Length: 385
Image (cartoon, rainbow, N blue to C red; front, side):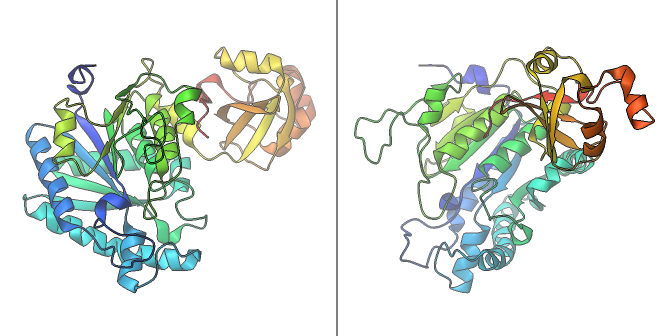
């Protein structure tokens, strides 16, 4: 059995993601509408965070539950399909949820701050840097940042982007250089089979590498209240891995689960991180929303993966409409292998694709750069989707 202390002993900046099923009272099902907040659980989390802070740890919470709480407050049956109802429920539930968190932490002399994010937020590097600065300042003043997806303003299918905030928590952990992401839910960790249908299912204590076999263990959502499921948690672990951040999935019903995890107890499933940590800028490029696609030939792909800039000669096609400074996907033979920040618009690239560098000015009448995408503005992708 692996000694977890060797991995977790130096974890000082910790993100704790709390699923909807953990925040609401137990015993709820699809036929009931009494799935209200469980104050005792929130008090327990506040106590554990206060103890960790006494030991010099910095803790950021990512809290789901706003929609579920709002549905309960409005007396609406769980899982309505209408997006406006879910948006309204999120707006109602978020303030209630934060009031409970504020009450819980105030018992231990701590203040909380609400941060609402959307996926589009991560495509703007300035905003992302502002997030880092805001969180650092809050932690410096002893305030606990509590992050949630801004569901009431989402134009896409609510929770389809992040999956009960699993991906959101991973992106936050990645971008603030956290050492550990703890994902609390109503499951014990990652099993090699579905434990609800297979009595011989084995809990995996340690995952050193996320292989296709490990990914195949991801299943459907565990309960009607949360939408994450194990699949989104494995994706979260992949995002954190390339940032050098460990991920631990555990059952929130374990008493003082966060403190026990930090003490190295064998709880849940620990995902190790890559030894080679990608630069923060490359991580931002990889996770940012792409505005279009640049298709390249095999030679250009080899050059880009070999840490060279992308030249117009290697471009064979353009998809979408984008401007200079936008993030675009790089695709070869139907597979996206990288993302990058383009120095030319889609219209310009349509004209200079396949051309040599010394021909750019003759075609456009001007030349921005020799390179279409500079090597320092390229992030090589791992399969995250």
